[in-house]
Amino acid sequence: MAYKVFSLDRSYIENNLKILTILGLWNPYNGTQKWLYHIYTILIPLFLLPIRSMGFLRQGVIMHHDFIRSTLSLLVGLAYVYGWVKILNFILNRANIELIINLLNQERWLPCSKETAQYRNKVVTRAIRVTTIFTLAWIYEIFICLPFFYVDECIKSNTTYEDLAIRFAMNKNVIGGMNLRIISILDCLFAILIASTIVSNDCFCLCQMYHITNQLRLLNFRLSQCCSIDIDFPKIETSKKSNTFNFECGSIYSQKSDLTSVGEFICCIQHYQNIVRMVKIINKVYGPILLPQLMTSLMTISFAAIHIFVTKTVTFEEPGSALFIIAVTISCLFQLSAYCWGGDGIIRESSRTSTAVYTCIWYEQDPNFQTNLKIFFFMCRNTLVVNAYGLFYLSLVTLKNVLVKSYSAMALISKANP
Image (cartoon, rainbow, N blue to C red):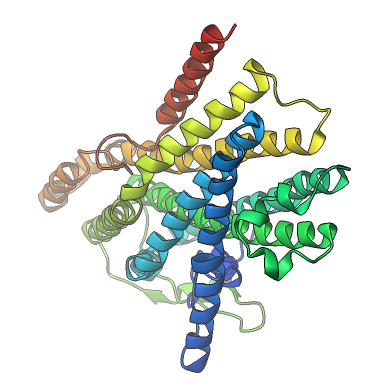
């Protein structure tokens, strides 16, 4: 069976980069186009997002008499503020992100066996498909859920311009004379655009972690096979029309190499060093913002659960508000689960590396190979993790702890307000 993936001059995460480009976060241009795109970046994520964030926060403070509307506005405003911080962090760390992208592609240029090439082809193709579908599904969820809230606002007979969140973010003299439905539609479109920008940034972080997990999976496969396979230099033939390459063509293994088991093992060490470097960069770029992410998710889930299960202020008599707050809760859980799932994959595959080394036929190799094996065991003795200043690791255990704490907060408030 032939597996098709992107050509060697393209990145594994090119699909995600295209989505970021559409939403104003990634500038792929040069010359005049580069500076024009900078204007687009300033307008969308760096200008509209802070305005909308302050609008929701002001609405939450001013409308304190309406408990559900006040807390909902404050939570959305807080999420937008934190989203703006993450976007700013992403833009400022572009150089480090470019380095991760380059390191992800370096493994493809190492000599490998036909079995390794085929396995890489399958693993990378699946990773590209999963990350693309995940990103598009999450953005699609925003396009579906946010309009429910605005439809509900428009169909209320007593709704006026003064009741809309956009009133706190825009000058009334600019849009105050427009029809209420037109204002609500514009507000909805801006909210969808901004929310999609925030989500695409989160998905890109998950995409990087998922591809690092697959690099570890590929490394473990190579380690387990390094003593029992012939090593070839794959001569890749690409098609300009399809931009794909096929590892099962018979002609692509025409250049035989003289690599021994020691040479293959050294390639595995080089691959592992690249992975360690990528994890360190991930921690450097995303580590400072992971702790606020955890706290924001904990607060959002707790308050949403209080509205739904404790105070029961969310009812389907007002379907727009009910569906909106449920969507916010699901999106927050989705966001936190994505981070924790991506980090847990790195921990899981990293912990299997030493076992993969042990499964190769190391005891039949020469002393030179066994010496390199000892060095590698020393390198991989610690599991690779993505953490926030060392306070917690991104893992499924962390996800469970957040859910437990959210339930505890909800139960405490429930007892305080019987």
